[in-house]
Length: 151
Image 1 (cartoon, rainbow, N blue to C red):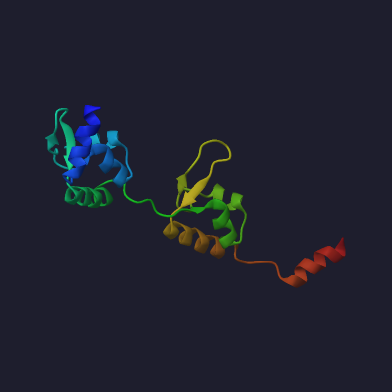
Image 2 (cartoon, rainbow, N blue to C red; image 1 turned 180 degrees about the vertical axis):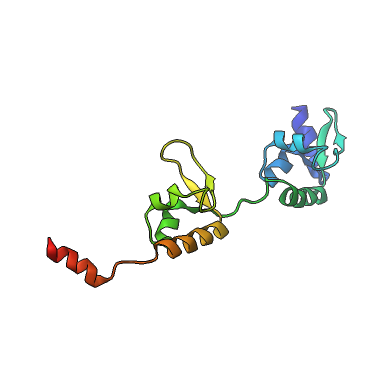
């Protein structure tokens, strides 16, 4: 009960507690505590329980630091392997076989044999260009009709 009164008093004073800041930044409270002293200077502690408190200005500085110096920044919008194959005009397996060797590796989003892959927009452009260069030749309509007639 005393903790909630203490937190309420801090919030009324315009300060934010560590869980509030973590939520605003999109990271966990434990991650925020681990970054203290590494990514940013140790913050002031207040109250009976010596809770970490931040000002709104400190939160903005932290947000900027996270974007610049860590992998915790905003994630790029990823393009799936199926969508990438559709754009390139080839089969999913064609791209999957060549990931990491002839093409950018992408990000494995799930585990297992049916893993989902994601690619940043820049990687997607590279893969589509590569696939069109190597597999861009499509059969003409006349050759497709010849095959059906011969059967």
